[in-house]
Length: 81
Image 1 (cartoon, rainbow, N blue to C red):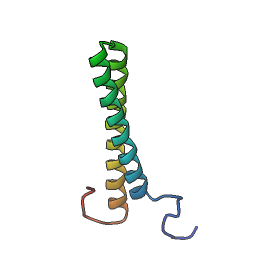
Image 2 (tube, helix red, strand yellow):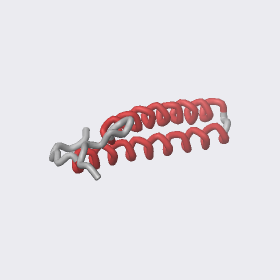
Image 3 (cartoon, rainbow, N blue to C red):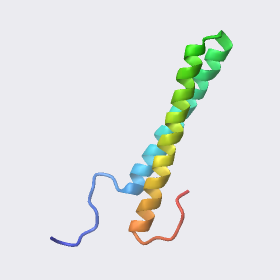
């Protein structure tokens, strides 16, 4: 076994950035669907929107955790943005 730096397709920091961006997009999509459902009186669309918002927030949290873990594994004391 050799000691070498991780050579995954994306390192955890990059995966974290991707997850944070995708999560923000999903959250925005959910907010829009929720608002549209409110305007049209469609409770089903509002519920779907709320679910998308929660999914987006969860994905953003995963991204932050991945970036923090990358910092810890690399011995970097900086906090993930």
